[in-house]
Amino acid sequence: MSRPSGPWRFVALCGAVALVAGTAAPAVAADAEDRVLFRVSDPRISESSGLAVSKRHPGVIYTHNDSGGSPNVYALDSRGRTVAVLTLGGATARDWEAMAIGEDERGRPAIYVADIGDNLGGAWPYVTVYRIPEPADLRTRTIRATAFRFKYEDGPRNAETMMIDPRTNRLYIASKLFGAALYAAPKTLRTNGFNRLRKVGDAPSIATDGAFAPDGRSYVIRTYFGARVYAMSADGKPGKSLGSVALPAQKQGESITYGADGRSVLVGSEGVDQPLHRVALPVAVRPSPPASPRPVPGGDPQADEGRRTDIGGTRTGLFLVLAIAGVVGYGVVRRRS
Image 1 (cartoon, rainbow, N blue to C red):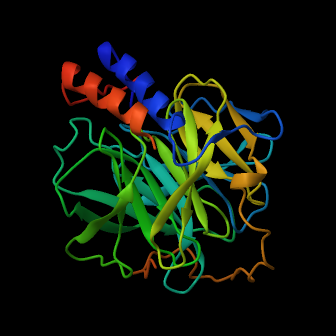
Image 2 (cartoon, rainbow, N blue to C red):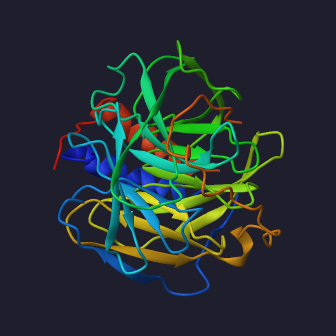
């Protein structure tokens, strides 16, 4: 879990100023007020830190807890009720921070969970992303996970954002602190050895989660205070900022994902009995109209076995952030709630 404290809380607030004070694109407001879809009332979900919308089961949203718990993914229905708990066999939950829906090597929907948090901002020599197939039969069960280990090309760092491009199945991770960056994983992930994360662009400071739009042509990264949408080229190169989106006040906003139609984002918070908000996106930052969806493979008796995969300016705010960071020192205090 991530919680700003002491003077760092003020620095994080200034990071939010940097997010919305950019000159690359104007801030834009949603064309409709946000609404609460439901409250996450399951007492076992006390530190919801990631969100993903199911591809196999309409209306189902997945989430997981932060660090220190069991390696579980919770499937919630449209009313927020837990309909299944998927335990990732062979996985550990050191510091889970994000999740996304991608595909496995056979093109079937798969759930990826990112154990990428680092309480000490660079103490862990590598991080891990786990993958399980999204089951066609949604029920409480244990599914053997496939583990992929990663190292950053420029050294260890803290991160809470993991995204998967739906066009290429390539995985991206955004680091969290000042001077944050977006890193791309190799096109083909390996289960032996390490996968190197290569810096491909910048990211907003104090990023707590992100997600790709359904068409893959843009992505969103959130902080504790707001979110920003970026263009993404077909060749996987991050583009310009398209605009910022105001988010509702939350206890500790840590998660975001796109709604199935791409016209809104869903945002959640750590804490017990927290609301899940649906925030309509401004037209200027919405994805293009979706094409006809591809058929989703289903009913495969081997669908629950893990396998190898092919994953296919803020000048003013930034100066303010850097100045304050120089006073309080570079670092962040993280503790479990």
